[in-house]
Image (tube, rainbow, N blue to C red; front, side, top):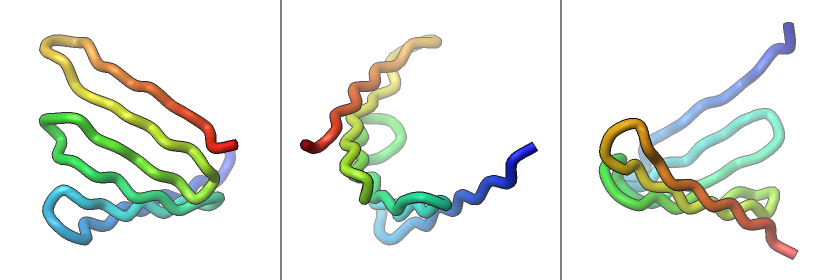
Length: 63
């Protein structure tokens, strides 16, 4: 079983700093609306929870 590491810190209301073994990312937005995540590896993710068991997620890679 691989060893994993992930830690998340709330910097300000609606802003989280996420740290894992390979990257650092910042998430903007609250849990009940649209969230935007920017990663040090170049990934940008937009996600949103929808009513019921549904959700939306779009991931883009920089360059």
